[in-house]
Image (cartoon, rainbow, N blue to C red; front, top):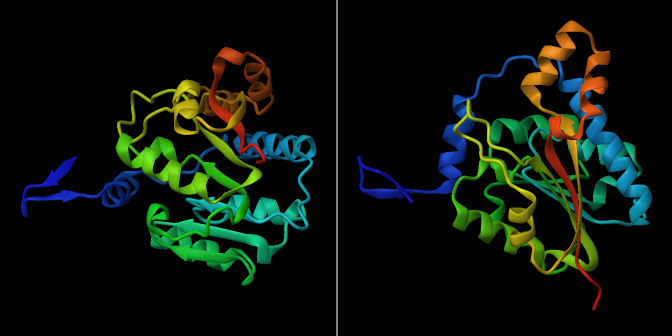
Length: 233
């Protein structure tokens, strides 16, 4: 627990996340199109293999950011009225409201405090959320909270760093075993994707084709893409 010594009160994890994002430098990333394209391929592959019907599936994204992942789901056939996003940072949520249809339900605030109905969603997305949460107790509470919102037979869809970034103390990698510990009741399938961002940026500056060349080496991939299924009763 971190304390604000000016008032002697603990600083919540949500407040710390706001501060970490405020410190981040928002520079253009030459490798971002490669990252997004690879992640989209992984989502499309998951959708084919899961057998999920996008026309009827209800989806929650905790930490929906500016709405890019929900926008992808719309392109894949999910219905706007079946999509819900929660976002802590007001400016990111405002951008999501601008880019998404009005039928998408967007909620401002800390996802762990939003009262989701039990077993309300077929899928819950957690994309680069937990690596920004440094309080292990908060991680466990959020994981338990969103897991309760998943229907039996539904699943969590996870994408996040599995290694620490020594140059960025505001994020912490979540290993496969750590993901497993957060969702012990689930049946988990994982794969490593995404070329290490510093290497990817350097490679793309030389030539975009180098991304795929280097990404063919599994040891250079830094993110886990996981499908964590809640078994039917």
